[in-house]
Image (cartoon, rainbow, N blue to C red; front, side, top):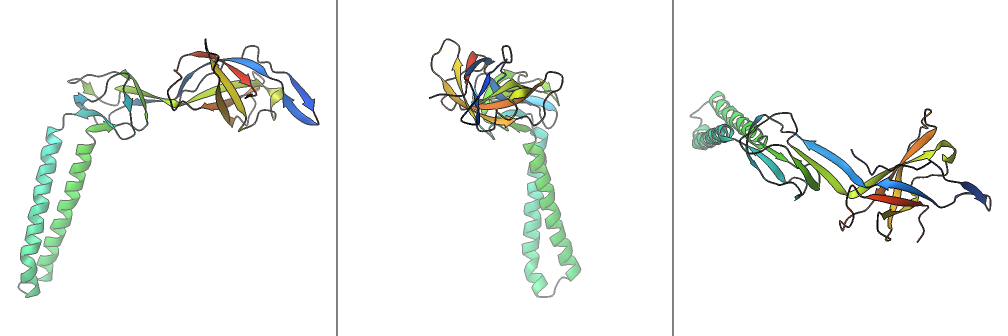
Amino acid sequence: MLRLNVVLLGLFISTSLFAGESHLDQGQLSCLLEPSSEVQLSSEVSGVVQKIHVQRGDLVEVGQVLLSLNASVETAALNTALAKVEFAQRKVRRNAKLYRKKLISDHERDEMLTEHRLANFLATEAKVRLQQRQTMSPIKGVVVERLREPGEFVDETPFMKIVTLDPLHAEVVFRAQLYGEIKKGMQVKIYPEASQQGYIGEIIIVDPIIDAASNSFGTTVLLSNNRAKLSAGVRCNIVFPAKG
């Protein structure tokens, strides 16, 4: 998962005590807006691309079909399986009256019912194999890379990259002495480069372990972007703590 990576200049925020409580003076941090998540999609099965349903830059929803592979063999197999199901159903219905009249044995009836169940199992398997010829989006996001075209072969290698732009995330690194001052639920205000409008973000993760090598700890900030006013890749400043 990608985050909104925040590069701390100097790794410095001063601290002071007011009315017996720990308090952080306002400080500015440099940051870079990035997607909160990234998914590189691969096909569940290998095959030849029949159609790619989206272009780079398109918005996609969860469950939207993105890729269709050639499925002529799987379609034929499903049609055959469904025909066997219909035949087994008709056979069971035709012989139901004979069974009630004791004209066929329990064993013969059991064979027909078993044949019907097996036909349904085979039809279900054929449906699954056909569904595997399509790849659907697991997230709501934006297509940023399309790596295959119709007619090309795909396997486990990614054919598309999707990123999430709402929400955006931030990772901020603080000095170890501020551990305990920075808490989950605290708010920061983010100012995109060349903009004086601030956007409120919330710290959603505080790492429980201090990195001994850098004597610091990381935090993750969540930033709503439901109106798509912010773009990933834009430099910004963070003011901490947020002020109205």
